[in-house]
Amino acid sequence: MDLPNIQTYLRPEHLENLTTWGNDWAWLAGGTWLFSEPQPHLQVLVDIQQLGWSEIEIAGDNLIIGATCPLIKLLEYPWLAEWTAITGLKAAVAALAASSKVINVATVGGNICLALSVGTLAPFMVALNASYEICNLQGELYQVAAKDFQIGSRQTILQPGEILKRVLIPLSHLTWQVNYQRLSIAATDPALAIVVTAQHQQQVRCVIAASVTAPRLLEFENRETLAREYITSLAKENFIDDGRASANYRREITAVLIQRTIH
Ligand SMILES: Cc1cc2nc3c(=O)[nH]c(=O)nc-3n(C[C@H](O)[C@H](O)[C@H](O)COP(=O)(O)OP(=O)(O)OC[C@H]3O[C@@H](n4cnc5c(N)ncnc54)[C@H](O)[C@@H]3O)c2cc1C
Image 1 (tube, rainbow, N blue to C red):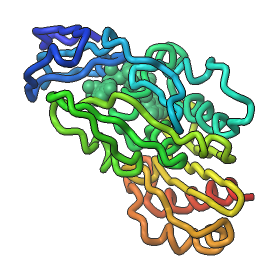
Image 2 (cartoon, helix red, strand yellow; image 1 turned 180 degrees about the vertical axis):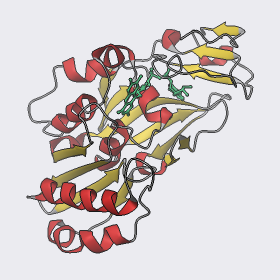
Image 3 (cartoon, protein in one colour; image 1 turned 135 degrees about the vertical axis):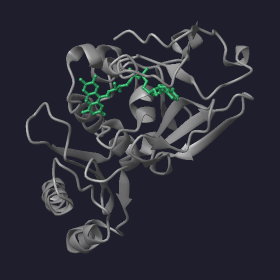
Image 4 (cartoon, rainbow, N blue to C red; image 1 turned 90 degrees about the vertical axis):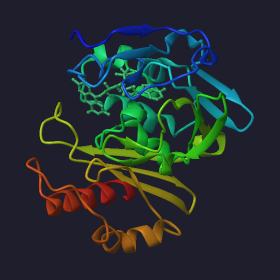
């Protein structure tokens, strides 16, 4: 779709080239969302594809995925066989109810920053205890836990002019067993509920998404506690109630998906 209101298109090679930011500016990554619907509030697009960020690398104790890495690379990369959690990452990409055209072009950062309640990557990142590295317009970097990044549907903690630069996943968590479950009415519909459970020996991290406005990490001491207490835990959550499904229905199917991940 053409965006007739856009007056300026910038394609910086360095973030330092940008010294200002306006309310009608947006970062442009793959553009699959930005060009999929009218954006009357935008006049300036800042294309981030020339920044030259690396896509996938290992540094220190982390697997690092650059925000501009296309989703398709996550499916094609020659991952180490012992990184069992990667099956969950691939399931998250495959769960995108979109055509292969979108998967070829859409980026990791675009998916995370768009922050749809049905966002597929974010719950995986929360389950693996990932952190996000964010850069502000002064060039300062800071990190935030993935679980604290998205605060609602289409809402993140990013301030105007801030950009997600990299996703850091602890190498220690890549050998966890990850189970990614998603339910929608038709396969190509947006998800009504997503559950991602990451387990290692007795440790467990269980994340619910799509049925709530932003991914929620449910805290349990171990697998037995999860199996015993998840119903009580779900009773305290605020589920989305809209024309597609009631809050009660979303709570029930979330419970079913949790059961599937732990048995
Ligand atoms: C037909 C269709 C079906 C879809 N179904 C699903 C679905 O089921 N689940 C799902 O999760 N998504 C779905 N999507 C959305 C899809 O995931 C997004 O279009 C895609 O992930 C956005 O990535 P992009 O790189 O193209 O981002 P863009 O379209 O370029 O940008 C998206 C938003 O993120 C911002 N942004 C991009 N990169 C950064 C960054 N590094 N830092 C800060 N802000 C940034 C942009 O300013 C913009 O607001 C669907 C999209 C389509 C078109």
